[in-house]
Image 1 (cartoon, helix red, strand yellow):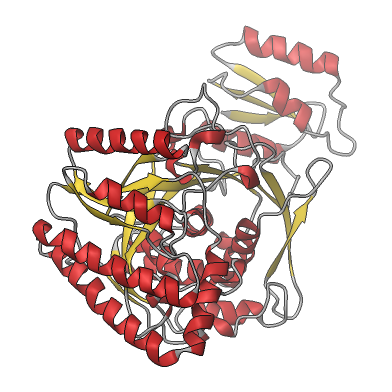
Image 2 (cartoon, helix red, strand yellow):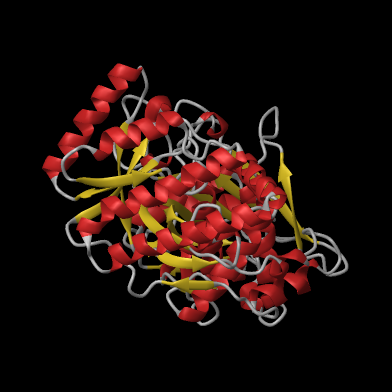
Amino acid sequence: MHCTPHSAGSVMICIHKSPNIDLNRTLTRAAPLQGSPKLTAASIFALSSLWRSLTPFGCLVTPRPRLCADLQQQHRGTMPDRRPTVAVSAPGKVLLAGGYLVLDRQYTGLVFGLSARINVVTAEIRTSQGVQLNEIVVDSPQFLDAQWRYGYHLAPEGGGIKVTQLQVGSRISSNSFVETTLSYVLTYMDRLAAESSKHKISSARVIILADNDYYSQSTASASQTGRFAKFSVPLSGANKTGLGSSAALVTSLTASLLSHYLPNDVFDMSTREGRRTLHNLAQAAHCAAQGKVGSGFDVAAAVYGSCLYRRFSPEILGQIPEPGAPGFSARLAAVVDGGPEWDVEVLTQGLSMPQGLALRMCDVDCGSQTVGMVKKVLSWRGRDGRKSKQLWDDLQLRNDELAAALREGNAGELPRAVKAVRERIRDMGKLSGVPIEPEAQTELLDAVSTVEGVYGGVVPGAGGFDALAILMEDDGETEQRVEARLTQWSREKDSKVRLLDVKGEMEGVRREELDVYSGWL
């Protein structure tokens, strides 16, 4: 492209050898400088005609020499400060053994990642030259009315980046996990921005897509096929299957934002240091969003994949102020960067599923209020410390035996090990008055466990009516037998029970190619 001054004065004429730039759009965006000839609709039409007549050459009139330079860079595909569009996914989880025990650092949890993933795509919002937005738009297009818009500003006294939800339509529907994560991630990046202008926060659009198995399909559109179902209800009206959607969301959103805004030499989630930063920041955001309840095993699985997990000391996150409060920014950065010594243990080596076996999930089409159940169990533990410690110690031994059978590939030992764990889980439920393995779930597990090729199953995690975890042979014949038994069960009990497509897998958070989301972006 070659630009020369026009005789009119402050107008530039640019000639280049490609008609790829939209002249009409460019000219209508470019407001004339003071004292410059005014570009009327007629003149734009005339110039457009000239543009087309000169193909493969073009003629562009603009009152802004700087715009000519920008267009030259656009022609070369090197527009300044363009941030990459980044797609990240994080897996769901199943706490196969260690429910409730994992809340205490004396005990561990056996966590498997799942093939069902929460996917987040972050892209910049491109604006006209001279126009600046301080807005982040978040869409979950699988659900009705699932858009959240947020403004952001720097709070005084080291309060970090304060995020404020903007009204969309006639009402505001909040999403605490998204809003809290935005505050935490933007605040952490703002600390880095003080060191380099390349880390400056700009407006962005975020797309969230959940693999089908995160939600019971009774509310899905019958015409929708593929990996991402379209639901006929708002997000709040969808029944979760209990696969850890909130932790996977916070982790993938955190990773996508960091990868979008920061260059690889500052944040690279494929490195050990990058995953440590991601883990610490996602743990802090997730705990804040859910009210500081939880051990963090779900976030650890979302970041690192299947693991043997020992929780961090709760005090590490206990001193972080609320977003916007004085000192929030400095304290958050100190925690994420490891100021307080993180004593979390995440062991991935040596953990595997015996060859030929698969961890599968069975949806019972209703979820549990995990927070309320946890509070009741911990209340019982506080009232009866001696008996609860005896039970937890014995349950830890049984969990270790199950983990050893899996690690050593000893499939023949699995039925006994699974049965032993379930016995102690039911004891805990009786003593605490919490339906950790409800009677209906016991009957269903017993029925499925009699199917040829099934080694047993548990009500994972905190229990209740979340999806069941089944250990079974990984072949089509066994799958058909299990599905037939579940169909029979559903008919006899007038309930909805189905085998999910999701399987256990070892991998944690990862980058994705954009073509995975064709039709959704």
